[in-house]
Length: 313
Image (tube, rainbow, N blue to C red; front, side):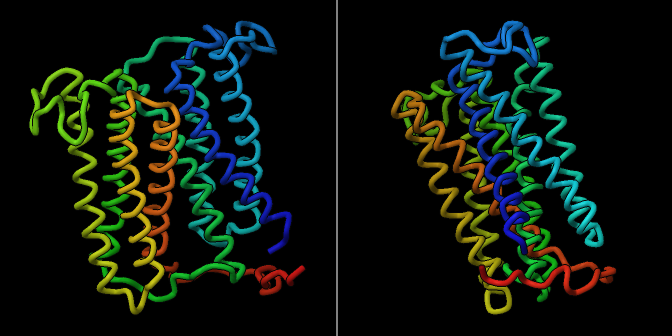
């Protein structure tokens, strides 16, 4: 694997992670209207006004544009040079589709009002694009002999539960985004109880906040069972078991950072950590789904020299 290809992988993956964090920063600082009803310019100008909200919003747009170009180039490379692997063609398509969808929704939210349920989709759409790029990079490393391949199959129940876990975690992400966009972050003023109650009134902002907490509690059970299934097959697939443990650890950090967000009255640093951890956790669960998916029955491999591991430099 050449240095140039490795650099492209890292720039694309890290770039999409930064896009997610920049978008989270925009939401958490209330900078979504920092450039007014103007897009792609900021208040009709190339350089934003010197106020914090305009700078945050315009920086998010600039970072998204740069990372988007890297992802487009990366996807073209996957499609043209590695299109003989159907998974890579699919991941390239997923990355570009959700990247363009997120850009379109980002422009739409500036030019026209959107309901809270629609705004809550934005983070998840960017997360899907990040997962596509991340898994594409993982597969490239595997094809070049620098990662754990999925040559040994896993049981159907482990494979099915892994995919269920990914969908469930995505749902938890959405409920968290909905909490932010409905300003329900401090509807419960304490943690782990909600306003001193184990089960509070299930309506309004309190109900929204409590529903997210219940979803997070459910994620503990979902990922514990995933780890249990992976443990039973750890001898054959230690990579899946290790990843399941990582997912559980990140979920614990996610829950603690969520609690600290409340206890610190929405400290920006803690809230950004909350977004970073859920992004990494989703990436790990997506990796598990890749690893438990069987290899294609038949693929038309190119000349072996194309996939030969690059020499140490």
